[in-house]
Image (cartoon, rainbow, N blue to C red; front, side):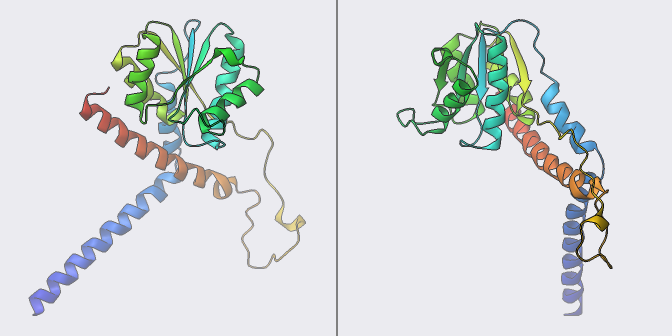
Length: 237
């Protein structure tokens, strides 16, 4: 019984150590800039326009309105207004007969931002990056120079997947968020409220923003690297 009790104690202790270590690593990483650089690398390693695109592919993410689709629509519209001979394809699974569907709402957003309706097409069937790539190749033949707009963490996998199905000339336009250009520090003592014993964090942007941003990047990066591994094993890259 004593041996059995010691064994259970060791197993429980080992499990607690593993759980503690697993929880501690993301916190420690969030105190460094590494998650930011990994996220940046996913978005820029395969990006950059080299020639004039004839097709602009907006790979949608989530519903509409949503942060991910609105920022992609903003980038796609800006690109489309610069290259006015290029057609735009919205790749997002959707029921196009429903004018309130997410794909139709993205189309409306592009029109609001100056894109002519006749330039906009849809790829509403593909439900993951691989199936979207196959459908987009069927639609375009893959020979036209194309710019791909998607989230930064999704860019590398998107371009590799599209090239795998036969696209020749591809460039990525990662939909990066831009930070506020106004300093966000504040003086705690000027805002009233309880002051005694409460930490003053008005000038500590690392605690207020940077730490949480790095945790967010960690989640995106881990998910995307797992997706890259899966796609590689499937032979889709």
